[in-house]
Image (cartoon, rainbow, N blue to C red):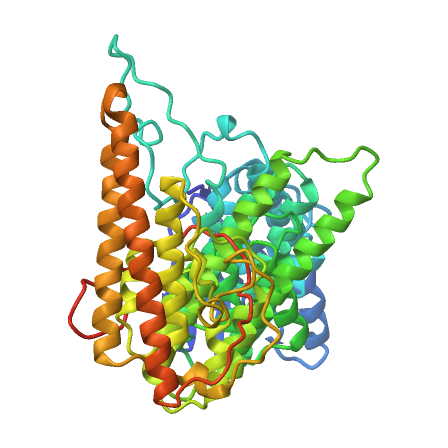
Length: 621
C-alpha cells in the first residue's frame, strides 16, 4: 500500500471532549470553524494563506464581527477538514489509499489551489494519485471503493473514471506482465505456486492465471463492480470464460447460499438487483459460463421473483448447454421448469440444424459437428431419464407431466432404455392406483428392444408391468440370442405375434385393437416362474453359442449343428410357453384381442441398475 507524508512539524491537534478540537500553541485562537457538531479553535493566518474558500467565508463573517465560520457540506466531514487544517499548519499528515480521496475532495471544497499558494494541497494530492495510487492495482480498488461516500465530488474530480481506467487496463494486460500482488484463493498448479523446479534446480517464473484479478474485484459494491466489468469488456482483451468466472465468483461472494441453491438474507430487493445485473453482464459467447452457474442463477431468480425477462434469458442460455447439466442440478426445479429447459434445448438444436442447411457447402454425413450433436442428445436424454426417475417418487406428480417430458426426448438416440424403464417402474410403484389407460400411455414410452440383459431379467420379474410387456421383453431377449446363432425367429401363433411391436416378427401390424384389459393383465405366479425358466434357457443357449465359437476349426461344423439343435429345442419350448400363457389368459377372460403400439426406436448409452433374480418381482429402485 502506497502512502505519502506531508509536513514536518509534529501533530499539535488536541481533543477536548467529543466535539472540540484545538491546536496546542501559545497563541490564542482567533478563528472558530464549526463543521456539524464539531468545533475547531484555530488561527486565521495559516488557514487563510492556503484556502480561498475560508478567506471568503471569513470576509463575510467579519462584517458581522463574528469569527465563527459554519461549514455544513464539506466532503469528508470533520476528519477531512482536520487533515487540510494540519497541512496548513505544516504538521505531519500521512495520506494513504483510505483517506486520500476525502482529503482531495475537502481540499477542492476549500479551494486550496496553486493560484492561492505554490505547492498547495490539491497539487500535492494529484501528484500522489497519478504517480502512486493509479499505478497500484489494489490501491486503485481501495480508492474506488471510497468514492461512493464522496459523490458527486469523486465523479466531478474524475477520480472514479481514473480508478476504473487503471483497473481495466491492468486486468486486460498480458498475465505474464503482472508483477504486483493479487488475491487468488483457488487451487493452483505447482507451477502457479512457484514450487515447480527444473531438473537443474532453477525455479521457474511463477505463472499468473488469466483470471488473477477476479477475486479482488469482488470487494466492490454492485454499482462500481458493474462499471468495472463493463470497462474491462470494452477493452476487448479478456475472453468470455474469464468474464464468466468473474461473475460466478461475485455471485458466490455477494449472495449467501447461492452455491447451495438457496438465498439467505432479508434484503430481497438488493439481491434481486444484484442477480439481474449479473444476468445483463453475461457474455454472449456460448461456453463463456458453465451450465452449472446458469442453473444456480435461474434458481436464485425464481426464489427472488425476478422479472420474466431475466428468467427467460437464463432458460434460453441453459437450453444451449443443457447437455452439461447433471441430474442433481435439475432436481432443484419443478417439472414445468425442466420441461421448459428441454424445449429450449430442442429449439436451439433445430435452429442450429436450419443454419447448417443454409451454408454454401453441404456438411458431410459424419462431420464432427453432427457427431457432437448426437453425443449431446445422448447426454440430454440420459439427463431426462435420471430426472424422471427422481420425480417419479412424488405421489402428487401427474402422469401427464411425466409423459410430456419423456416425449420431448423420445426421438433422441438411446443405446438402451434402462434409465427410462427405471423411471417408469418407479412411477408405477409410487402410483399403483393409476387407470388402465394411464398404464398404457406410460408403458408405450419404453422400447423393450432397447433393454439390457440385466433390465430384461428385472422386467420379467416385475409384478407392476403388464403381462404383454413381460412377454415382449422375453421375446426380444430370445431374438437377440437367436441372431447370434444365425437361426430364424420361431413361428409363433398369431395371437402371440399381436402382442409384439410391429415388424418384430416379420409380419404386418395387426388390425385388431388391444383392449384396456390386455394392458392391465398381470401374470400369475406360475406364469412368472415359467418365464424365469425360459429366460434361464435363453442364457444357457447363448452360452452354448459362445463356447462353440472358441472350438477349433476341425470341430466347428459339429458344434454348430449342436448349437442349432439346442436353439431349435429352445424355440419349440418358447412356442409352447407363449401358447400356454395365452390360453391361460383366454380361459380366465383376461385377454380378448391384441394390437401393439410400436415403441419409439431410440438409442442412448446409460448406466443400468440391475436387481438380482428373486422368486417374486422387485422394483429397480
